[in-house]
Length: 247
Image 1 (cartoon, rainbow, N blue to C red):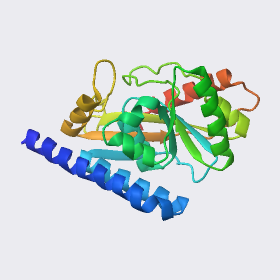
Image 2 (cartoon, rainbow, N blue to C red):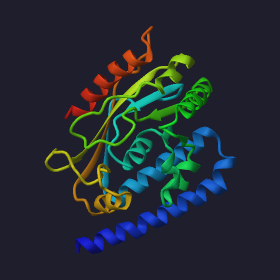
Image 3 (cartoon, one colour):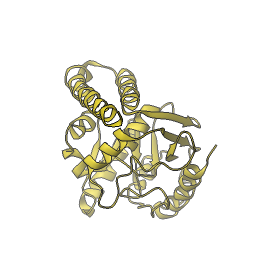
């Protein structure tokens, strides 16, 4: 029965992704930004229901930009979970653009791609992010630069924080957790780390029982004279506290 349920989720999720790509192609160009954000939020919330993921939001999501959201990173599911709580424009590693189906979906939703190994591309992205922040966007970044196992927070890379400093925009720490809704213990289902493949992580998520995603928002903060490294250190401490908070 569990296999049949997993296959059913997989089929419905695939159809929902295809439908999402179609909506992006046919509707996004004629919608206002608030209408687009509403559509993204409702689409992602429906996807979480299909995947069997319960969403819990703690704290206050940003109402408007400019804002740079700074979150810990464990899974491909992080983007869906954060968009279900409050849609934003993500900055992601370049290879995510080529993920099957999901790549086309997140590209259409406005994701910005960066070659993390290229200093020149990092500088280009900082300038582009600063421009988007000056236009009032909400951007989201994962400063760890890669996914972790949820047990320990990896060091934060500070480069992209320069965009918020340049644009005089605030940063908002966000803590993400995946837990068993019955026990409150960490749930390994969505993890995308080590030798785990993308398809393996997706299948594990589709097969999971009692999976709850918790998004906890902190308080916005400005650089207040800190350089990007000092600010990254302080933001990391806040994200670490938020992701460990159980209630």
